[in-house]
Structure formats: C-alpha cells, structure tokens
Image 1 (tube, rainbow, N blue to C red):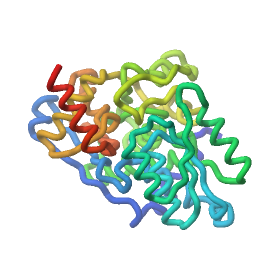
Image 2: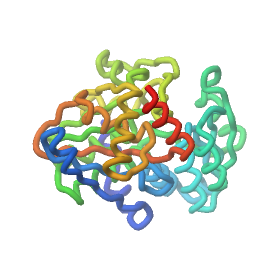
Image 3: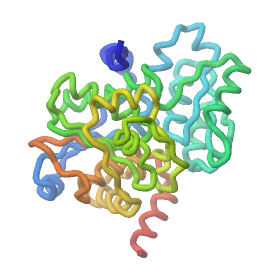
Image 4: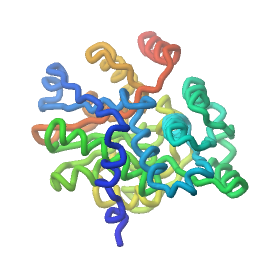
Length: 323
C-alpha cells in the first residue's frame, strides 16, 4: 500500500470543518501583471495560531482515541507547529509538552507557553530534537505528534489546498514553501485529485536545500542546520512519508535567498497590507523574483505563516533598507 493511499483527506476536511478558519484568497493586479498570469495567494498567515500548521496538528490530535489523547501529547518544533499543537491540545483539554530550540523566536515560545504547553529547551546545533522528544515520550507515556512526517498531519495540511480549489477553482500550478514536506505533500495530493496536470513546485531557502538535493539524488539527504532567516524551514531532511509523496507528486524544488525573501515580505506589506514571516513569504519570493516561472493561467501560492514579532519584522526590513 502506498503512503498516498493512507492519507484520508476527506476525514481531515470533516474533522476541521468549523474549527479552522477558511482563510481568504488574495489577488493583486500588480502581481498578475508582473508575472503574466493569475496569482491566487492563500493567506494562511491569517489562520488560527498564525500558520497552516494548526490544520495538521488539530487533525492528528482529533484522530486519536480519547484515552490515548487524554494521556497527553508531545511534539518538537521551532515555533509554528509548537503553537498549533499547544492550541489544539488546549481545545481538547489535554496536556502538551513541546521540545523547542533555545534560540527559537521569543514570540513563538511565549505564544506556545500561553496556550498552556510545557516547553522543554534543547540546543538545535548539538542535540537531536527527535531524541529529546522520544526520551520524554517514553518516560511519560505520551503520544508524539511530529511536525510533518505523520499521516494525519499530512492529511490535515491537505485541507488548505482543498479550500483553495473550492474558493478559486483548480490551479494549473501550485508554489509552496518546503521545510520537512508536510504542507507540500498534503497540498500535492489534494491538487492532483482534482487536477492531475497541476504542476507542484516547492521552494526552500538556498542555505537549506535538503529537499531539493533529496529529490535530485532520489534518496533522503541530511544536511547541517541551515543558517537562514526562515526559521520555519531550518529542517535538516525531509521525512520518510513526505519524501515518498514528493517523489511522485512534486515536479521540482527551487531555492531563494534570504534577500529575496525579505524583498517579498516588504512587497506583501506594501501592496497587500499583510505581515508574513520569512518562511511564509518563501514560496511567493520564488515567483516574484523569477526563480520559478508561472505555468498555465492560474497559479496558487500559499502564504504559509505570519508568526513574526513586530520587533523582528521591523528589524528585518530595516536591515534590508540599509543594504
């Protein structure tokens, strides 16, 4: 049985109905004219907890048997999945423990704590978050909900593109930011169910192109923790499940520089009045800066998150203006 056949997108859509926000699709004549086709921006920066991650986290926790769920949830994340799991667990009134790097953005750590989760810190450069979480899971008999390599998480993420197609119609091309591959895997499965010819393109920071290399070499490639402003994409390899799906459903993966990401954050703020974090702007950066050429008449781009503090947002754009 293939991994794809185990992803229940319809069950995820049913679980999330009335729970997640149906985020808007933004349009821009300026952007359409610039790239030469219709661009549909799915604004997941406006989702509950500020990112698409809430979809997968809630679906995975909702799919558990109640007695398993009640014992508690553990996960690991640099921020967006952490907040999503913490909030979903809070809605189910179950305890959540999150393993987060000590250098995770302060705003993401404080939000995770505010949702009631216990935070366990680790050093992302010297320790394995998977090992830290596994030790706590075994000690406390908790259930692990990882950020991307999980069938119900992937199914939950598929609802974003299911929504987009319901709102705007089928796309000829989807451009999606890639960390571990949960969003693009679910999105590709949802897209190809409705339009098998839809081209799905991933975008990574140039400093952390583990997925691009993995697909090129047809095997999972592990890299060092990348140094990039896109903290949500500081993953070191794709997941086993996500890699298998991407091998069959993702046409290619492009990369963008931090400077191109900053240019796109600035563009979104100026012309769409949207505050988007670096990882959330990564996909659009590839289109806006010409690293990905549009295909067909209708292109969908997911603005995957908006969890960036005022101080950090201002600092990033001021530094861009100074260079």
